[in-house]
Each structure stands twice: as C-alpha cells, then as structure tokens.
Image (cartoon, rainbow, N blue to C red; front, top):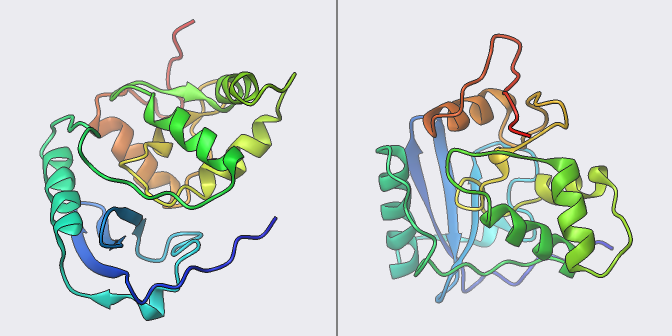
Length: 186
C-alpha cells in the first residue's frame, strides 16, 4: 500500500548540524513529523519537502534540544517530545517497538519480527518486512532504528548509511569489532 504525500503547507522545517552531517527536521504545529539525514534513502517519506517552510516553531526547538543532549552523550527521554507518525498500523507498530530498545542496546530484526507478530495477533512475521518498515522510519535517531542488527550481530542496513549507524551505536557505547559485528547477549 502506497502512502500519499501529506499537505504540508502547515509544516515547518529546519536544518540541524550534527557530528554526522546535516539533518532535516520537519514538524507540524503540534509534533515532529520527520527527521532525516540530508540525502538519506527515503528522505521526506510522506512529506513534500519542497513545500516545507523553513522557519522555527516550539516543536522544532524541542527536537533540536533533544538532539543537542543526545550528541552531547546524554540519553534524552522521549517523554514530552511530541511525535506525529504517518504510516500503516504495521509500520507504526514496528516504530513503537524501536522506541522500546534501550539506549546502548541492540535488537535483531528477527526479535522485532516476533514481537510485532505478537502485538498484531499474527502467527509469524518476516524479518524482511520489519526491515522494510524500519528503513522507512520517518524520525531517525529519536526513533532508534540504528539499534537493530542482523541475527548474527552484523550491522546491516541503515537508510542514513552504515557508517552513520556504526557511529551512533559506538556513541551509545556499543562495541563493534573490525568486521562490523557486535556481540549479542543471549
């Protein structure tokens, strides 16, 4: 099912300079609707980026403070940071599961597929379907899709690029060996 682009005349945006490059923030009057590295795969998602007005609002200022704290090495809370996610029930379920992964920890695509299947009342779910939903995460970093790895612990897929994923995990204290593998706790 293809989602249509939203009417964004009420959306505002700003560019945030991070240690990993520029990040585009987009919000409506009430909540953050997007956070993407400039040029990343699926940038913009369901938002028409050409129609976004680049000015500030309270939501963007709050998101910038969250990012400042995160890049300063803190573990900022999602509490109080309003998010407006646009996507199917399946995608929203996967994105909610991502938010439950603690700072400095990882989960596998397979473990998220099992959890999503349970939440959605399904017998099973393909890890690839979960990976697709994760790849379309509209609010990178804050919804921590970088905390998901392959079943054997290898770093796989990240819409912002594998080097950014590696940096974010290391920033959170996750040890990555020279072959881009982390040790999974069983």
